[in-house]
Image 1 (tube, helix red, strand yellow):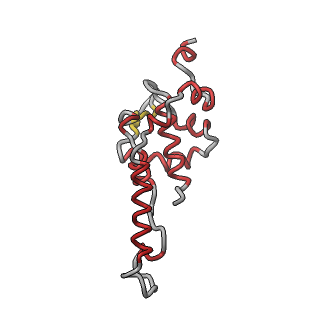
Image 2 (cartoon, rainbow, N blue to C red):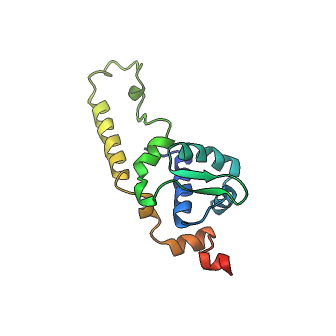
Image 3 (cartoon, rainbow, N blue to C red):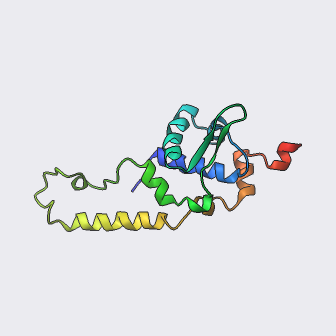
Length: 150
């Protein structure tokens, strides 16, 4: 299975926010860190907010932050929210013209493979992906609280 660009960037947004705890981030700075267009990132942000992964704070000095602890956001949840389809083959969609569609073992094998994939993702959290915060800060240009105060 190949994840969409939307899912890839959704995970990146969550990683950025997890690497920047206790501080509101602006979507523009997140987009800049990943060299992505801000309107594209805004589109991706909406399902993350709806799912409760991200909170928005309006007004002057507002921004975005994780809606729950990074250790409580597993990758399976993110993928299930951001992927539009888990169709691995035409017969997953129904309406297939294949004469074997109702008795084919391929369908069962693909369903098992998909479940194994999602199950594996469920064992990892955003916190697991952001353990090396100093590297993330340097790479993404995130100021540490001490740098921001200076």
